[in-house]
Length: 208
Image (cartoon, rainbow, N blue to C red):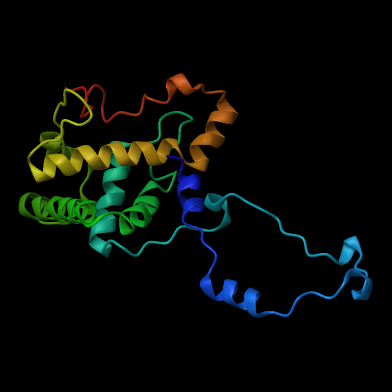
């Protein structure tokens, strides 16, 4: 699902605007209305939602969002001319998306991010966001499990979370305005969009 299409699907007309419109008196006949030149008409410049403003966070706690951002940089890094998850603002988008997702998805994400921080503090005495790549890998790699097919969800909650967040980060990145712009600039075809795996060949659906 395109990120911009998802955002557009949430737009609704406020009930108060509808009520005000219904209560307003009918417009005057055309002969009684003053003429208005084309120059005086209001002009609206339409832009894509992703380019209109910075995405703000708010669903995850500060430590959870920091862990998600660290995870994004490790799992979906920038490669050559392709933007990574951080370049595409995938963590901010997932913060927005999960805030409007069913309760089980919210519990999965919050539990998974808290689990990364707990494991990090246990082994390295600092939050997950402060780990270097080698330390982060030591926590992430055991949670990356092979799957026979997409719906084969691991029973372990942390492995389930890692499978889900890896897929969500890649999807959010590939459907971002930044990814589309880089593809236009480099001439990248749609057949190259799958090469976004965590330290090849470790992919949750392929195995290592």
